[in-house]
Length: 275
Image 1 (cartoon, helix red, strand yellow):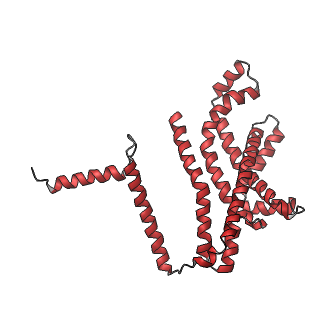
Image 2 (cartoon, helix red, strand yellow):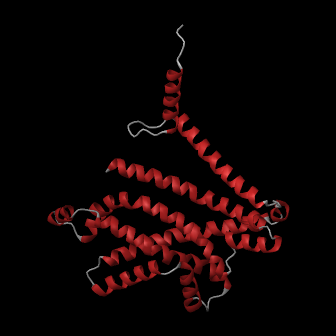
Image 3 (cartoon, one colour):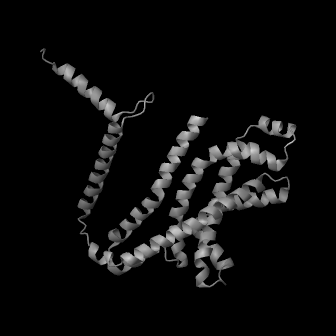
């Protein structure tokens, strides 16, 4: 048996490490390579966090915070409820204003444009105060949940309308002319020509905006809605355990947004493959 030289061993080790930690665009990465890279990235991130907390010399005190677990649970369920109500509302608002942006009636087109530009150009927190204290001030506390979901929908609807409008405009003019040539009405053109092609382009950014809706719901705590962020603020003010109170909030939002992010990535890959 011939002895293996040090140069050959180093080359083999380099080749193994390259196949384990470097991606090849011509072939998909193996399960082992993805698992090893994930473990390495998680380990590095854990070391960074551990070093940061070690430098702070922070003493964890979970017992007082865990006594308020029911408050966290109810706040998390409230966040889920607001998000489930805001998601379809924001889609409906976005679709309506995207169609208004293409309306032949110019006043409606400019109303939609004003709404989109003002909404996208001002912070959500300012809009929450504006909508509630000007339009919703006469409502009782029982309507704050629905009002908060509607405000969040109006904010996200402006972004979704631009996503929909970009998807509609991505359809080539020649296909629209072909639809007119065979006698399609405007509704039929949207139904059979525009929407089937636009939906493939708008789904990935739509999914990303859905994650933003969930995270933006934390700002509704200023209305006194007892959602997840308000629960953490209440607990931290009593226990003075700020890290212990807000770390569950970060994990809770990740549980809601991470599946959407993974879904977004799969949609983007599918859209690239189909195009």
